[in-house]
Image 1 (cartoon, rainbow, N blue to C red):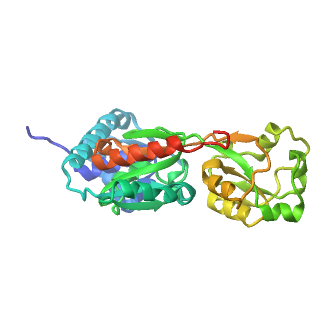
Image 2 (cartoon, rainbow, N blue to C red):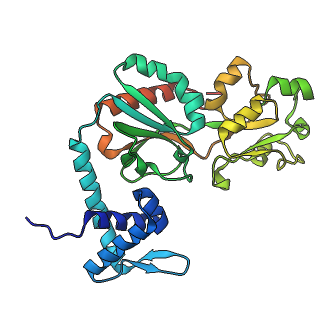
Image 3 (cartoon, helix red, strand yellow):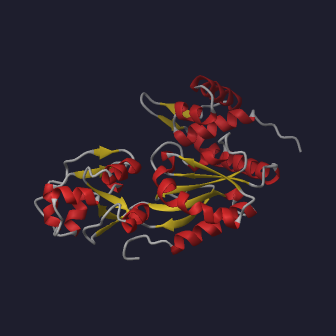
Length: 318
């Protein structure tokens, strides 16, 4: 059967623009210029005989033609990607794992030796990037297009989203705990009740872009039964790694995810003066492209990671 189709590059450009509703973001994903994307869309519109988008003064939206066409184009591209992935020869022993920096540094890396002991033939590449937090940068669809990923690639995401075309396996639903360094308490005096936090410096974690999803000092203080404490003051950090470094350096008290500070608390590098915990609205999940989910290498890593997460404590009382 002969297929009369426009160029595949034009269909890819259309799907990317329709997903982002932005020529610029589509161009970044496709590693071309916005002008090149615009030319591809115009050529496709000329082929079809009608507009795919409505160009508004400050926005872009799909036309009726574009809305009708998008689902089938997306299904077709997914089928093409799946067909290629099924037969493409990749180094079977290479696995790339994408993860948020704080999770990679404080939870995953200390455990990787046990995976290597079980699977000594696997060459593991760990890619640490804040884009693995929902709301920051590209989503996990980049796993299939990242030119650095020569073998299979999976990701640990911190967020709440489901990702079309990907299998998601929840790992940890962590809790935020209040921590500080012993040196801080030696300087300022012990904290006997939460009300005494009024004399401390509050460290704020802004690593989650959505303010409504971040840990809130005001919320923690309410849980601890504390009123009349100004929780808005103190330094603010865009990275959980920086928050923990500030807490370890005695710069103030911090709300930190228990899985990331458990080892520091147990070793005495950090202390947890109070038992009140604040559930995280985001969870850690393993995200795997559908087309890679049943590869033996990916299955082995998934089984190991789920077992590690199952034996780990999400909170201090777990």
